[in-house]
Structure formats: C-alpha cells, structure tokens
Length: 70
Image (cartoon, rainbow, N blue to C red; front, side, top):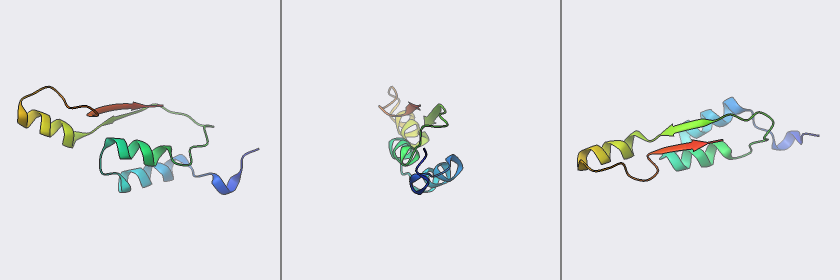
C-alpha cells in the first residue's frame, strides 16, 4: 500500500526541480526526491549552461551536458 505521507505527485516534483535546480545533476536529484516508482517516465536533461561554456571554448561537450534519467 502507498504510504501517502511520503507521496509527492510528478507535477509538483517537476515544479520543485525547475525552481530549485542549479544545474542538470541537481535537477535529477530534486526530481528523484520522493519518487514513488508507480509512474515512471524517461527524462532527458540538456544543461544549456554547460553547452554554452563548451561552445565558447570551441571544445567537445563537457561531462553532464546531457543526462538521461528513468
């Protein structure tokens, strides 16, 4: 049985992640917090700040510029 006191709906976790995250990895952390596992999705996180830094250096992409989360 689902323990309701530890359940946070997906739309609320997404809003929280969007507001609290400072980069792609922290977005993954905030979204996975209190995940019940009953409704799973695949998320593709593209960290535009990391990509912009990589473009400015004219080098290959830095690590964690693209993250896939399930």
